[in-house]
Length: 357
Image 1 (cartoon, helix red, strand yellow):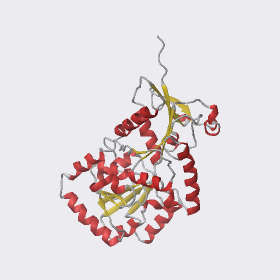
Image 2 (tube, one colour):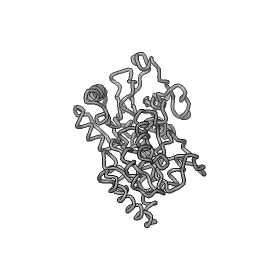
Image 3 (cartoon, one colour):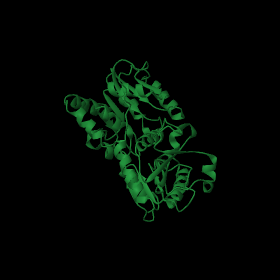
């Protein structure tokens, strides 16, 4: 008896090319989780950089990113459904009849770029929205901005929060760059939107036993300017920027810090607060974009960035946290709302609904 023909789905994971970014991590963890599933009636193919072929096992097939796929998609294999995990991908289905699902993670460029550049990016994104059958996004805040700034023409938008996965290290060693003292930790690419500059005045008003590690890519000009301001404040021994760190270092810092600081202004979802809560650690954050939506009442929020008020608020709330032994488990339970098992299950349901019958 002839086997039934399976429906084919292409999953665009091109961002695996840079695992040191949030999107690179999303591509990796989504690919790992979806790759665990076996379907009787669906064939999954991952579009990946060539060095990732085979990385996710034999339950999926692989197609390599290439100039042919990018510039001449009509020459490539057709699929019954196409999904891309981010709005800046260069790859598209070979047929305009193929249902095309795209995730718009955020519109942060509206607050980062000049009006002219932001308008240009918005116009490019509008063309992808026009091509899409369905838009997904990673927070209600992002959905609001999408509806305000793009013409959806009655196309559906669905919020599916990303999963958050933390490093699992049995006994990580203390990193060499970590000083003695009460550690505060922040992690993320060092860019203006992360708002790390406000932590300089904050740390200047904190007791000297407190030290701050800001980990993340610091290759841009902004990080050099931030380090210059730290030196001018005389805090170079209390605020350290080690750059990109290993999973072991990240694990050690989450385990041993007193709190995680997250003063960011622009976030599609914001992973570090959820990561911190997975370790039972208190989070001190801004009230901007999606941060209160994701962290809910489980974080402590700075209502302004006056450094004296920030320091006083921190010392008051950290004492409250340390006096309540039930809080770490409460934070861990909240963080488990955001798992890749749950997010992937939602996408599988979505794919099945949008596959042609």
